[in-house]
Amino acid sequence: MAGGTPRAALADLLSGNRRFVSGRPIHGHDVTAAAATASGDQQPYAVVLGCIDSRVPLEAIFDQTFGAICVIRTGGHVLDRAVCGSIEYVVGQLGVPLVMVLGHERCGAVGATVDALRGGERPGGSLAHLVDEIAPAVLEVGLDDPAVLALAIRRHVRRTADALRVDDLLAGPVGAGRVAVVGGLYDLATGEVALIDPA
Ligand SMILES: [Zn+2]
Image 1 (cartoon, protein in one colour):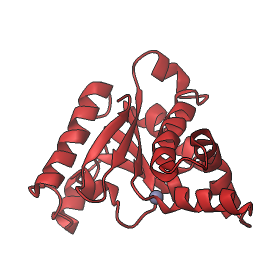
Image 2: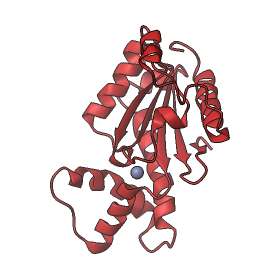
Image 3: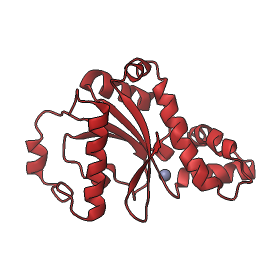
Image 4: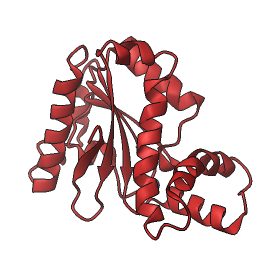
């Protein structure tokens, strides 16, 4: 619920994921027009920023109904002004107390960044923005690390969450404890979301 505490919002989000994992969602199959209509005015209690990966549909993995969460998805959950502005709107105008950045195992965007850095070739077009934004996480882990992909995925979640915590319009409410920014990791094999920031 908008205006609630970050802690309660996180508990709601994670309990939705447990329903999804257990195979007993209460909203998962209710994708009818009636459910959409019943949502009335939106009162979302969380905003989730995730990857575009087709295996990670955010409303489904958190078992959320219409009107419950705002969702933003970009390749590798990379930030840009539109993403930050959208989160600022949700927090500032809709009173949402929780922002979750959700990465996932075997992320293609992070994998492509590892490949680009190894090959020394920066992609063209706007794809370069994704690689540029993910590259620091990969380089912090180190290209020589045998687990670079898995570790860089986690590092990139934390870096993205950290960037949002100091965002111009989010830093105030985050500092005051009215809003929390957390980082999660989705396991493609089990469907579970683990909280990794704060761990
Ligand atoms: Zn991904």
